[in-house]
Length: 635
Image 1 (cartoon, rainbow, N blue to C red):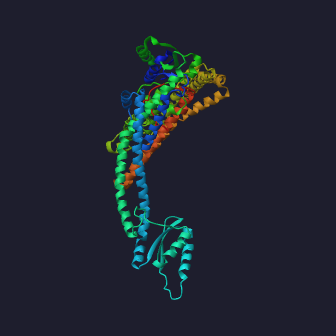
Image 2 (image 1 turned 135 degrees about the vertical axis):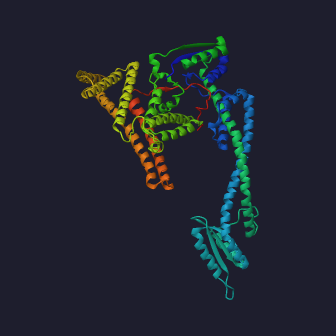
Image 3 (image 1 turned 90 degrees about the vertical axis):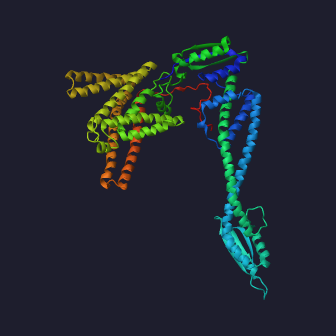
């Protein structure tokens, strides 16, 4: 249902501006008309912006994402305990945030350094373990071992130069001992280990430095330690660091759990105050009077007027009126449906907003969508599984998941109902185990009655959509719309009457009357929509036929469920047979749930709502404090 609106104007004293804005913000029912200004003139507003930005930065630095865990009680408690209009409170808050930011930065900086050191040690240990045997062999032979980090493309050239230099010995000098071993780091870099006679170590160093190579040493503080001692120190350090990292992670986790919700609540409250600053500047007329106007639901007027009179008495002047017909297009649309059907408003969120004087189809969707889906699924066992899934999702804190869960509960109820009518419990398992019999018919055996029944559903559903379209056209005084819908209704009535008369179920005179209705309907259609009206009429007939898919989808689901159970007949009551049967039932369940949901949604959007629903409305966005059910994470 669309809530009726009134246009209200509020005059007040400039001295009451802050309290008046706060009161309207708390009431949260007025959809303001005047544009909201940026709060530029207030120094306090600037402070709020800076603190708000700092809060959001801290929330992101904490990696806290628990917005959905906050409750309205958390906000109310914070509002009472922290008067954000007090400058001293804001200054103290800034100081506390600065201290918290410094502490958090230190923790995260140390954590980052440890992670970086661990990564460096992990890489160094991989290199060192490859070089350990080479180093020990060199030391046992009395050779000096050097490690060089070089570009791989320069390796062959530098080794060639080193060999050339070592071969330049005088007659009688001993042959220089020289070996090398490489550890490839990536496509471009290698660590080259060289063992060489100590007296020629300087030659090797000279050659490698000319080739832009650098000494490789373990990443430890004691740079002069021998290689084996350095390796031991790295291994010890590598074992110690994870414990400290775990301490830091635990500290950050506790900080996140303790401070994340507090910072999130403060961020929301500060943004509320910024909204109040913005509205306060936009309603200030520059003198002793403030003025604001907007749209308020009629059912909220008593509360609004009573609260303003109680708090401000004669210091506020209120004036309100109902919108004129010329204003209908600018009035915001607010929906208010019974709690049972409120989850089905989700379907309208995928469409442009319904106009203020449009028709809200929420309740009708709540009736027909689960009815059609349940008719397609039509299985007690599948319905029970859907019920469990829906009950699980309905308890979720996220509104979207909760609404989907509640819708699934409706679908499950109708699935069980039709399962009883068809005598299906996981296909024919109910018949096998409990001798279950259908109360109406077995749809896998008797197809035609189900098809005729679904066709009848289509006729009723489409006619209802056309009737609503006729009402909408008359209400909005759009002649071409209501004539087109009326013509469609007359043509459909004539077609139905003619077919029934041909079957001999009605007197012959009804056929003549039906043909007359067809002619009249075509004339009305052309008067309303021209040739397009005739096309619309043919489309309406096609829409009715598309409801036969309800029977087709249901039949395929029923047959697949029976086939799944027959795998047990083929393989026996074995693990393989049971697993295949369960897998087939799972596949069938997914297909049945998805197929029935998508087709039923299509029937609502195209065949039904396409006959009367039109967008172009404006969302009702009241000036209200945050309600966490509608709160979205800041981006």
